[in-house]
Length: 459
Image (tube, rainbow, N blue to C red):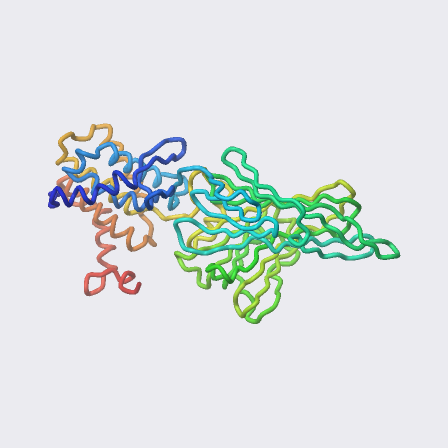
């Protein structure tokens, strides 16, 4: 392909890539120089980098930016070859922007979390994705002390807070002194125990771990602690649809059509919950909640303040009996993700790789197109690629073609794969292979009379 760009236009297009967006990112122990999603961002998208490869590989551009182009292409292939391909990789650490517990703020490459620990409230939003703010809080502790039942608001009883940093981990903590009414005959006020809620944030993970521990000061029965989220209908999440994983099966559930409280689960182990907008839009934010001990979840309660929208979500864990000095600890992982791949994201939360988000993506046609462009443009480079490099790229082509050989391939991936197939045909100077012809035929079948992909026209 001829380079038809004027030198000044070409340099103006390349400059932001080479000097503004280029940065280092690690993937499975290997360091790459790749392109960030925006200036100063710490997220590196596989798709965006694949789109940039064609420009960086053009003869005339390649000679000035060979090292960057090769590294970006290596990053694209590494993202595509990942055991669980995802949308983005992250670089950078964890930053405590505000240390005052009354106005704490922490940023990682994946999210921002802020709030007031003295009131037990933290807000949480993704970085570089669909907007949707989640509020962590709204917790209760319930127990029987003697013959009296008690239900105590955790946030109203906070007596201690802490912001602690340990390497690439930050822990946000609040401690509540829980009192209640007890006694076998006469009612009297007494200390029941201490409840500690810790939010554990890690630089290399989009997952937040919530650890709730209750230590009894005296004998208690029917103790239940909650892990809750509040104001879910106020921050752009949608919160008009839910999906629960129980015993290996998913169940869709909707918030109450009328204001009020409903039980989403009662007496059955809950492995995973997902909350999002109705119809699960592909690019919408989705909240994932994953208890570490599903069998300890005794119920899930959903409150709607307005028709059809979830406001307050409460998971109750227990019930247990504790003697003085004994502790009940509950662990739960939470994630704000993108898209409707609820099942794949749920399973990915158990095997997440450091530095990668958990937004699943299908096999990328753009990655195949990037490699095909490099192979095709090589003939015009002043310094040709080595035989070993060419063999490595061709081996990737075979792997990616196999991954793309699926009936439900997305329109854009199919278009990229078809263009790549044509580039490979021209490179070899031979008739198209049957699988390349099949890609082009499949693409043609999806075009309308105006030559536009039907899905694109509808969008």
